[in-house]
Image (cartoon, rainbow, N blue to C red; front, side, top):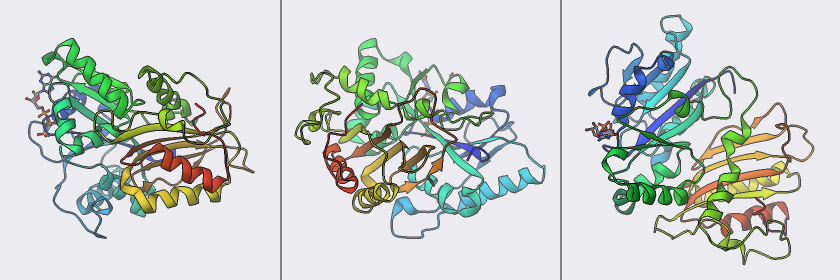
Amino acid sequence: MSETLPVTILTGFLGSGKTTLLNRLLQRPELSDTAVLINEFGEIGLDHLLVREIQDDIVLLNSGCLCCTVRGDLVTALRDLFLKRVRGEVDFRRLMIETTGLADPAPILHTLMTDPLIGARYRLDGIATTVDALHALAQFDAQPESVKQAAVADRIVITKADLVDADTLAALHARLDGLNPAAPRIVADHGAVEPADLLEAGLFKADSKIPAVADWLRAEAYETAHDQHGHGHGHDHHHHDHGHAHSHDRHHDVNRHGDRISAFCLTLDEPVDWQHLVEALEMIIAAKGENLLRVKGILNVAGQEAPVAVHGVQHVFHPPATLPGWPEGSDRRSRLVFITRDLSPAAIEKVVRAALGITSDLYGG
Ligand SMILES: Nc1nc2c(ncn2[C@@H]2O[C@H](COP(=O)(O)OP(=O)(O)OP(=O)(O)O)[C@@H](O)[C@H]2O)c(=O)[nH]1
């Protein structure tokens, strides 16, 4: 996995500042080794050698499901770029793909993962989403796609903060706490960001073979955000004597803003049976795959010394990766973080508990 080229997906609602951000980024020397696929040239600086246009409308439908659409143009562009790189015609070490403002990132990920040649050469580093400080709150209410884009992000770039007052910005942060408590937020003034804050969001950083588990998973953010919301349930993390009657209250309020999003972390104290856990995930994917916006996990698999990382966006999952070892000082409990839409934490917890034969509460923090 660490040998493959990292791919950053840049998404965000219409007019939220993706092009502005890319233009600024491409001026930075840190991006000189980055190939960029965009939808329209528009105002993008054409002098960046590695920028290429892709046609959003060329798709190969391999099933009726939109998020299983394989982007034919993207496959061609990705293969082509890689071949050129092998032949020494271009040199790049990472890739950035800008989506259109209405795009769901799932088809892009599906394309990255279902084509065997591509899957062997590229890996998802992260999804960066631009969120327009001026319009996002209204867009979240009116456009479910914009909620989804913010919810799946690994990095959130808040744009146009110069156009709003402190209260509006605070309200946006509060809303994002519920939608996506873990993704670090970067405020970009007219696209100005530190590339390092945006890139390297994945499990494997460039130039390091040691996976950055804690930074990638950010399991604690789900707890912290929960506490900040003041649901007032204290820290009874070691309660093992009740069912999920209480657990309902111990994650983000599903309907707090009508966003229908839940963000939560399940903690499994004992090593897990791999087959049983896969069955649980498959069951959830089969029934509610499109509601499973993001899943990340680090697992202590029974009978295995090294941890296994799992990673999915909707029903598209990366192949599980066995990591070199547990991070120093980690407590070796399995953690699975979920961001879901219209799918309650209690329902997921129930399936996981049933598959693994666990009777205790899984919101262990
Ligand atoms: N005031 C202000 N304007 C900004 C900022 N970032 C972007 N803009 C403006 O917002 C408008 C839209 O920005 P774009 O970068 O074109 O947005 P986009 O997401 O690429 O737009 P689409 O490709 O149409 O989805 C432009 O007029 C930008 O100049 C910012 O931080 N502050």
